[in-house]
Length: 144
Image 1 (cartoon, rainbow, N blue to C red):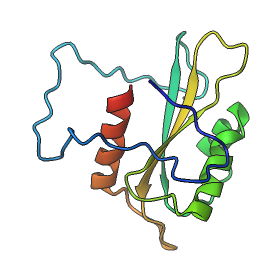
Image 2 (image 1 turned 180 degrees about the vertical axis):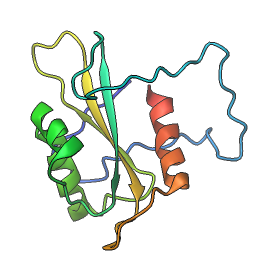
Image 3 (image 1 turned 30 degrees about the vertical axis):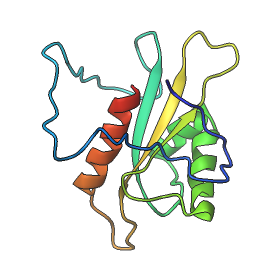
């Protein structure tokens, strides 16, 4: 079940990691699990069906210009609004996953943008925090 988020949340909009999932557990990957690598524009998929775009961002709440930021903004203004409003609620912590429903009213399939907070903002640039990345992807795996 994917719950849509309000573009101006009044409390945390980050998805919670269920209590029964732990980093200490050996996560078993099913034999039939497969990841398909596709190149091209993530916002313009070449296959039909539900769409989930996950973007890894820092905890600054500052939406960038160009590249993937512009491509996502062309799909919907909601991801930018959720991301830039989140600091007002102290809601951009490493490992957070904010799932934004951008499905149009007449759409035959769902579209979501997952905003995964995997970097701590630093003026000199920031590296991906692997623990935060793993936390976000565990949250994503739980709801996908």
